Length: 276
Image 1: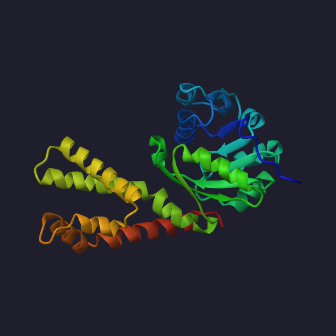
Image 2 (image 1 turned 30 degrees about the vertical axis):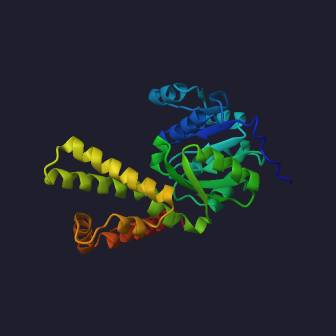
Image 3 (image 1 turned 60 degrees about the vertical axis):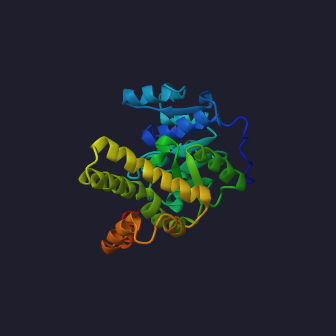
């Protein structure tokens, strides 16, 4: 059966799962003007605060997941990995090949998703928590039945909450170790920098503000200048100066190796947790 592109001008988007990630994505889509909230729906089963959160920016909240799927042309599965199988199997009779299915469930492979759904028009996306502030680093991989236009549509959806790349699914454990778990590494680094500022005599509030803005600014320089981080580091490292003294301490402590080891360990853990 020929797979027809979804109409960009009229498609409806549904979220199965009404958690924080679904809220962040839906809000980003609405705020970017990509879709009006009237074309987005989800279902809330028990938690009134989740209903209030989605209704606060105009998203339609329906009684059941079945209603969401029936209403939608694109369905984003945003549920916990341990329940995604049961959710998809229950919805399977409604998941026709005309619908584009998208999963953000960590560690759940396309092959399994396609088997449970009964068709392969699927795209797997790995976002990360900065989606909540419109700065996600997301990666997508297209299933066997997804067409080029499906990928373009999903890239626009997730591009509304940050940046998105396309990669082979075989890289997803490594992606989990880097961008999936990475925000926590950076939170730890910001906290440590602020603690260093306090140890050097700064008030806590000022130290935290300086640490977080410094990390934000440094990341922006990497993305906006296109320069290698090593070059940017060299640009601010004067002979015999303060910066090289600090870098010397970081190198003695093995900072680079620790970050590399953290990514590899998290990637391995992701691999271990994936259903075999």
